[in-house]
Image 1 (cartoon, helix red, strand yellow):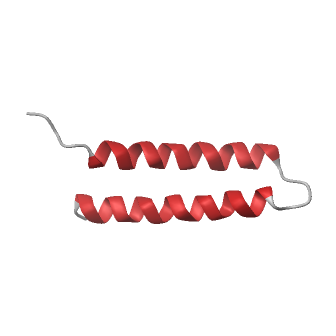
Image 2 (image 1 turned 60 degrees about the vertical axis):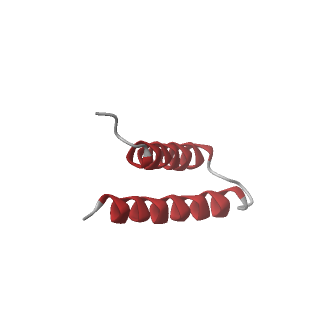
Length: 58
């Protein structure tokens, strides 16, 4: 898998997590622990996307 493909896969996971966060926040009684977990996973993926997108300095 190329870096571009990997970044695209991560973007898809990021979008899926965003949808899950939205679903959880719109529930009558959102689960704070679940929201925290989803947001952490989303942030880790975002950090990985940024890391892979940065040009490498040699």
